Length: 309
Image (cartoon, rainbow, N blue to C red; front, side):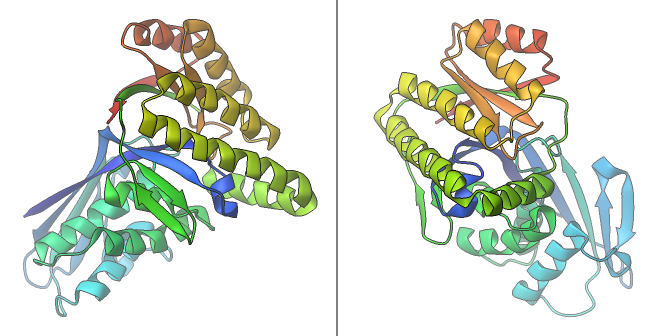
């Protein structure tokens, strides 16, 4: 039996703009994880997938077309080449909320790849893991930025420019984030497509806004490396302002960001595709209880506290 884990993630700066070649900054969230168990099964059983959280058990050969779990398993086995006629049980569960901008799909895929590689004694690089997961991300998101699979595979703070640059960087001064659930599902694929259509209609305006978001992401990385937590917070509020201008916020997200500000958060914004999902708030140890209480009063359905190091 082999067990592997993968963390969630949040985007601190640059969502949506990253799809159009601007930088983004993301960090892993280790307080929530996907777990995959791979076990040898009796001869002749084939490969069985047990999706515990979904209450589903099915054979790989019977999986529906474009099923992300079976797709990831098949792609990984093709790369590993462990031989024909495999008999395995692959059990998947996760504490990462689905459709909340925490990278749940990428985390599950990453844990599958890691578990299969370890089970067959293969050493896959983090880059190879990320590449495999990216192929599954196309099923989840249509035209993914690549940031989810990358930050989760590397499990480190990441500065990312699609197709150009990926840099792991250091955090000079740890900081605390509240990850706050709106209770509304965020449909990444639909929202990304909506933004693309808007960009096609108003290309000049959107390019200008994406440039501003890219500048915020660059400044955000510098602030993290310099340990300037107050500047990180200011930039989060600025990023939220820009995200509202491309129509990916929502009344629920706006209420949570406003509540965080009133509670004394240094910064707050949506994280991920938007129109639901999560808001994140930057807090200090002496303020996180008050901010959390304010955001719950504004409709938060759940709060995860994570320290970025």
